[in-house]
View 1 (tube, rainbow, N blue to C red):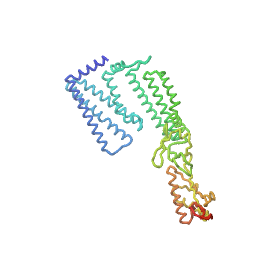
View 2: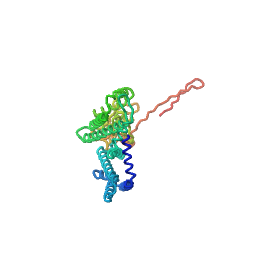
View 3: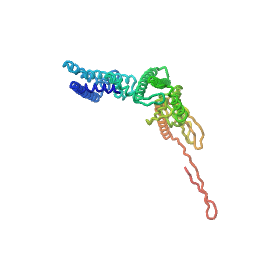
View 4: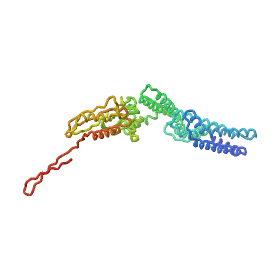
Length: 444
C-alpha cells in the first residue's frame, strides 16, 4: 500500500509541474477534439441510409467505432512531435501516446472478436465497457501501478478456514472465468457454423450437436477458469452436492426439459419447419396448430397462423401426443362431412362434391379427391369428401372454408337439400269433464 501511495505521489508531482500542466491541457484538448470527431462520424453514418453488407459493411462499422481513438492517436503523436521539437518535457505526452495506441488496439481486438462470434455474441453491446476495463488494467501495468495495486487489494480480505479470500482473488476469479467463457463461446460459435453448414446431416442433428458442444464447452471453461484462478475444485464438493439435491427436488422440471430437448434433437421427431398441432385429429380439428420456429434447450418455439409464438416446454412434447403433420411426408388428407336429403340422388351429390375441388390451387390431383357414402342417417345420406394438400404450413382451415363454400353454392344451384333435424311434439290436455284433448306442435 505504501509503495502505491509513493508512486502516485511522484506522478502527481509530475502533473503539477509547469511543463506537466501544459501537457495535461494538451491531452484534454485532444480528448475533446477526438470526441467531436467521433460524434461527427456517428451523425454522418446515421444520415447515410445505405447499409453495405459483407466486408464493406464490417470495415465501415470498424471505422465508425475506431474513428475517435484513431484521431486521438494521430493528434497525440503530432503533439508529441511538436513538444520534442520545442525540447519541452514530454513524459505525459509519451505516456498518452502509448495509452492511446493501447486503447485503439484493444478496441479493434474486441470488435474482431464480436464479429467472429456473430450477431448473437454475448459481448455485443458491451464492447465499450469491456474495452475500458481491459484498457484500465493494461494502463496500470504500463504506468507501473499494477503490482502495487495488486498488493494493496490482496491485503484486504478475510480468512475462511485454511483459505483466504481477498478483493484481488475475487477480481482475478471473475476476470479469469469470464475470459475462459469468452474463448469457449467463440469456439462453440465456430463449431456451430461448421456443423450448420453440413448439408448431409439432418437439421435437428445439427442443432443438437451445436447445443451440446456449446453447453459442454461453457461448462468446461468455467471449471478451467476456476482452476486457473487458483481455486481448489475439491472445495466445491459441498456445492455440487447441494445442486444435486436441488435437481432432485425443486429443479427436476428444468432438468427434465433440458434432457427432453436433447432427446427431441437427437431422435429428429420434431425439427424446425415441422407443422404440428397439440390437440385434435388429422382431418377434423387443428386446435393448437402451428409450425416449429426454433428448438431451444428448455422449450420449442411454435408460431401459429395468428403470428403468436408459443413457448412449449420440451417435456410436454415428449410426454403428450403431438400431431406432426410433416413428419415423413408434408402431404395430409382433409375430410369434409356433408349430409343430403333422402329425396336427392346420392350419386349426383357425390359427383357434385368432387366438382367442388376442381381448380383449387392447393388441392392435389394425385392422389385424386374422392367422395364416399358413409352411412344412412336418420335424416339423410351421410357423405364425405376427402382430398389431399401438400402445404399444411399455409393453413388447413382456409382450404376447408373454400371447399365448403363451393359445396354450398353448387348444392343450391343443383337443388340438393341439406336436411335439418326435426321433431314432432304431442301435447295432451284434460278438459273439465275429464276427456283428453290431443294436439300436435311441430318443432324444427
